[in-house]
Amino acid sequence: MKNRAVRIALFLLVVLAFGAAGYELTLLDRQATATRDAARAFEEKARQVEAAVRELRAAQFAYVATGQGFAFWTARVGTLLPAIGADLQKLCSMATDGTATGLKPGGPTCPFVSAALDDLATVQRIDTSVQGYLREDQRLLASDLVFSDLREADQTLAARIEEARKHQAAADDAAANTVRRKQIATAGGAAVFAVLILLLLVPAGRTLAEDKSGTVPDSRLQAPGVIGLRPEPAAHGSSPEGEPMPGAWSPEPEVRRASSATVESAAANIPHPVDLSGAAALCTDFARLREPTELPALLERAAALLHAVGVVVWVADASSGELRPALSHGYPPQALARIHGVSKDDDNATACAYRERRLRVVEGDAQSNGAIAAPLLAPDGCVGVMAAEIREGQERDEGIQSVAAIIAAQLATLVTPQAAATESSK
Image (cartoon, rainbow, N blue to C red):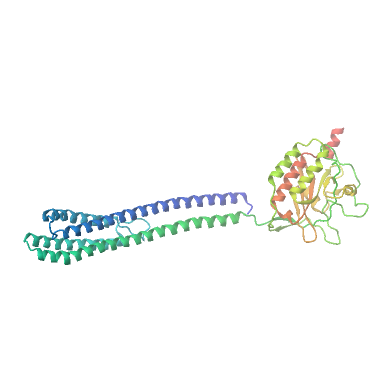
């Protein structure tokens, strides 16, 4: 997707989605904390009630023990029974519904607590009978009740409280698992949404020239037309040997015919990283350039950044309407001498890049390298073209294309067009 407004809108949508997910995760975390606190409080209160029931049982056994004060233990039991009843009532209010989204008081644990209250009433009733027998000095009947009915009632009460505690623990675990699943679903949903949006933001393809690269000679000669120099005039036409014009990226007629049409092609997966720091350092050195003799080394660095086997800098001659080779790298030194001008009306990538003032890409194949032709754009128009022969399909990488455009923009500041030089000499 290349529409800038849509890309910005999608990015903002991702930000909003992550914000909403973060807010939801915060609420779920608070809910999980509240669930843990409620479960811990219920557990502690249930343990306290169980301890009170054990103390109640011991006090009731002391009724009939030799040497124990009856009045003391009846007073103690009279304190424990209402305290246990009040704690059981509190347990019912502390019980929560583990299946609900929030913390609902009550829930499925309350029936067990209510049953424990009924058991406590049974204990209290039997305890009253035991105390009555003891006041009448019927210790045998009292002992029989204490070690049979009362003991069984106390055990039933303790078991009911334990059952309520375990049931509430299971409900709390279910609530914690529910919150945990919601947290995972929220985080996972936000991540999947972000990935989908990022896939939409990835460009689906780009325009490539149908031109295929030919052979382009090169030279390390000094560059006429650069650093204030203009290209030397040369006759237009083919080389003496009848070779195709090097640097113009015009294929041999018997093999394939160049075309100025463009096609959409998906970006290839390029294994080589783009050296942005190297490109920045190269542009800095271009800006600090003082002598033309420094240009070949800089062009060699540019070729390395572009993964290019060769680079040719073409400079426009406004008077003849031709592009003349001014500087090259990566080819035999004698090649530049055999290169003639390229007409701006020619049907090849270099001429097209000059006419259309935009970067042109020639896609390579198994037999030939690809190429990038980047226009040298100045305030008064296009002053030339940088043509690079790229190996291993690197011409399809948008990063390499961007670096080529950056280098071409820097080279444009060093070029003095033919027309401008002529006017200044008058």
